[in-house]
Image 1 (cartoon, helix red, strand yellow):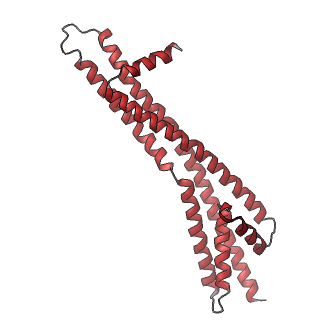
Image 2: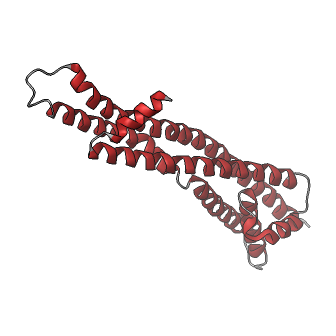
Image 3: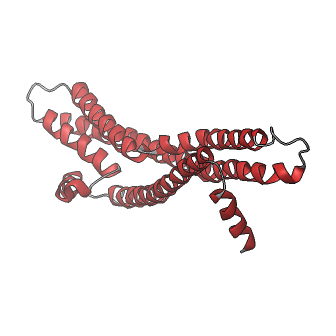
Length: 228
């Protein structure tokens, strides 16, 4: 408890520039934690939705029936469901054209799936850049506050003939709080960025794999229709 009161006392007696630096770092830290919790929930939901859809897709369900189910969900259908919907919708639309070339049909469906997959990944990537920036910038912002505080502390000794460490120590301690705050803001942001980037990469791989597998299914469907 005494340590906390001492830190608060150091902050309150810090110079105005150092206080502004600390305020910026507090804002960075607060925004980072908001994004961290939101992104954690979003990625967990995306993983659960992907697991549920893949289980439904590979259970042998009729593609037309599955398409109607996904379409009925409207905007709630995201992730792999959106990729499937975009690909199958374009497949059906192209197949309704009498002069449709089988290769053109498949390419159009694959293109629609890539666009949908990219859109879904962009949603999951949103605000990750902020975490990376906080992790990179915060230590330097804190260091700026520390350097400024030390300059102020030593400048105050200019008119004193005999300076002691006891005179300099309070000012330096106040300045070092800025460095500590910079690290406090940066470390969670860096960890979360690396963690979420890895999870997002895995989800992206799942999207790409599903697109390839679904393209193979559509290709076999085209061949079956031609030989029917």
